[in-house]
Amino acid sequence: MYRKHLSSLIIFSVFSLVFISCKNKIKKIDKSSPKPNIVVIYTDDLGFGDISANGAKEIKTPNIDILANEGVRFTNGYASSATCTPSRYALLTGVYPWKNKRARILPGTAPLIIDTTQMTLPKMLKNKGYYTGIVGKWHLGLGTGNVNWNETISPGPNEVGFDYSYIMAATQDRVPTVYIENGDVVGLDPKDPIQIDYKNNFEGQPNGIDNPELLTMKWHHGHNSSIVNGIPRIGFMKGGETAKWSDIDMADHFLKGAQDYVKKHKNEPFFLYYAMQQPHVPRTPHPRFVGTSGMGPRGDVIVEADWMVGEFMQTLKEEGLLENTLIVFSSDNGPVLNDGYYDDAVEKIGDHTPAGQLRGGKYSLFEAGTHVPFITYWKGKIEPTVSEALVCQIDLLSSIAKLVDSKERVDDSQELLNVFLGQSQDGREDLIIEATTRTAYRNGDWVLIPPYKGPKVNTFVNIELGNSNKYLLYNLKEDLGQQNNLAESKPEKLEEMIRLFTAKRGTANTKVEQLELK
Ligand code: NG6
Ligand code: CA
Image 1 (cartoon, protein in one colour):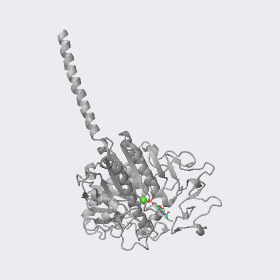
Image 2 (cartoon, rainbow, N blue to C red; image 1 turned 90 degrees about the horizontal axis):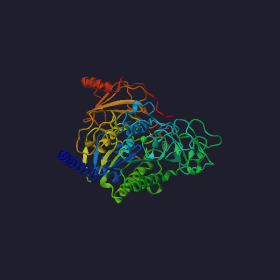
Image 3 (tube, rainbow, N blue to C red; image 1 turned 135 degrees about the vertical axis):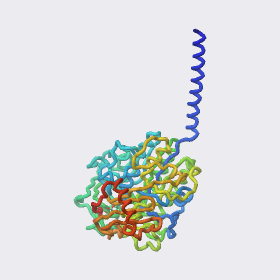
Image 4 (cartoon, helix red, strand yellow; image 1 turned 90 degrees about the vertical axis):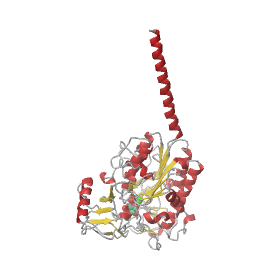
């Protein structure tokens, strides 16, 4: 009896020892490969051809080029949409923006369009022990309607997965022109409360139409409401004088926020969404960048943004984080020159082609709307690669989830981790792209744009939108510039593309919503 007990005790002890040592081993392995930090550097309206790594000759972007040339430079990388809000929605949620009716260019007063119960990139990372933060442009709505800017604003980024947020609510050209930190307007004097109205001005307040003498930048279309720092904006604002941002310092301000964030959280795995405001309008380079591009403010703020990327990378290096940080660099949509202000963007463009060889631009269903710079960089982990794989920002959620050992996957977001790490060129088979609620379909080298009513060209911004009364079918391998419509000469291909597109998209959406252009 006693013997029997002893032997089972021995067996049990040996078992436990093996189990414990195994457990320790697993722990050890975990420790020796700490979770990589994740940084998404997201520019605003930067075109495929706006960086020298993608062929720009007239403008130099040496710092972005380092990421591109030493990481994976994607030649078929896409934003989900040709405008900001829908692209950012897809980036953070992994859901196609055309599935959310509210995912369209939002006014500064719009409510939050991400459901607080929805999975998001920061939420997934937070669940895996990451500290998560955003510094820069938000533009996904705040609150639930009728925001009181003088109290803590909620829900917002902090309710959809960010531990820390330092944001501008919408765009640089929209009120409120203040920074918001974790829901509170920074530097607000309670005796001078902020009021915002997107329809009517407040009595006695100047505006862009009646007070041209107050303007340091002239408006071309839209942008004629409240005047802040001499710049007429979209929407009316009263009060909050001490909280108003300085436009020429904005890029430095966000850079410092991003750098401080990294320094503060360097000892834990962190995620940073560094959402730069350049080169969106109003283009307000800091004086030290004025004239550096020879292309006027648009070129100057690209040079400025590139410098910021260099400074930010330097911080990662100094903090010893470069080899443990995956950096994704991209843009929310394609380029536009005149987006509402007279700022010489058109006049001084010279031979520069912001979209490279692509047709269209911001707002367009043609390639330049969504086909943007896309780079992944991870020192020591990613080999310098040029990848032709089809990838989209929407795929980052599921792919990064795989990287950090999370089981989260979102249907529209494809897990392409090996592609993002440059270890495979096996990207997406197909992708639905969006431009101001219209959709088009890429499959392999082929692009199908269904017929849409509406103007062929948006004459304000001078961009071809991709509207046509017939199907447009292009083969990008032979015709990257989308000059030869093959819909008639390739009827079988056309039919196949319509069938595949309709199966994924539902009946092609032919209802044209008006752009928010006056
Ligand atoms: C448009 C604005 C444009 C820009 C855009 C949003 C006018 C006339 N045009 O409505 O200037 O702000 O919205 O850009 O108001 S985005 O990059 O945030 O999508
Ligand atoms: Ca944008």
